[in-house]
Image (cartoon, rainbow, N blue to C red):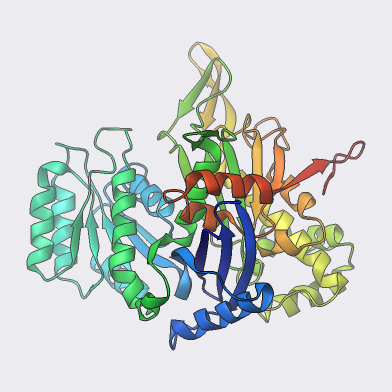
Length: 470
């Protein structure tokens, strides 16, 4: 058997997927509590024991690849020039690389800014600013301020190429670990975030894996390729684009509902799909990831409740307000809690549907009618996903919930201004394989595509009431 072991060192659990590459099928799954606070080998051994319990004797693995979001993920801070321009470009680079953005700063850093950045204790800081040949002053000043700070994390310089060498040298002379990448905005309103994303992933592999202690288990796998969110994004990209001998599904969206955040990934150019619509703002990245840190199924239940209201959640779950409050309190008080009864399962579904709807509304663009000197005009803000033909749901609440299709229905457009998908096919990643598909994208792309095609479960719309069901 030509088998691969795909490992996700998660914040709570270390998860394994064993795959037969020749047959493009899932052999089995295993998991164990993540033990990054002590020795990651303990959690990995427990996950391997669980896998062996499920499938019997483990095969010889030709590939053992890993991703990680352990210990809260890749904490990142970005610094740019103008908040709406280079600072926003830096933010997009960070999210696309799988980072968890904990702070974004613009203009000249102040003493208060530096104190806040130091308190945030990022794993990586991305320093941008100025188009190529443009403003040099602010990025130089910010480099000086950062050089004199107490920060010890790696700094990625991805700003004005005219001064990038000087800026990197200034930081290196101060003893800071420095990596250079191409400018995230080389020209006004032109983005080039992929080089910065690659640099972030390299730093993750070279430094963060050591900081999280994952290298202590290095003998048990070949290498850590990337942060887990980046692996999901790469899996989505492969499924959309296909490989040499296998066509992909075309533009798609992935919704990942998690305990701390709800992430949305889209693989689509996002350009206006209707004639006469004018794009406003920065161009949207083809491969885009957004992270909604206030929409989590456990750590951030309060954010969902605040956004939609207790009455809506209670109504969707079919519970009285008093019972809904009690259930929400129990779930929020135990971040590792799985639903223990039907009330908790229904509330989990209501929370996930609300998180999906809110996260997709923030990720996708909207149409606005504006008045100009020549009359009314349609203006698009954000990414047009209305024609996207596939939406994939992943995450524990979708895989194990009572009605995953009703949750995914929240990703669909519900008004004339929304640029969310209007009539897509819905697929469920019930076996949590998207990260594994992403890890295999370079090594065995054809097998990874076939694995996704055979494993994802189609969900269909019920006639009559507009609901979605399996």
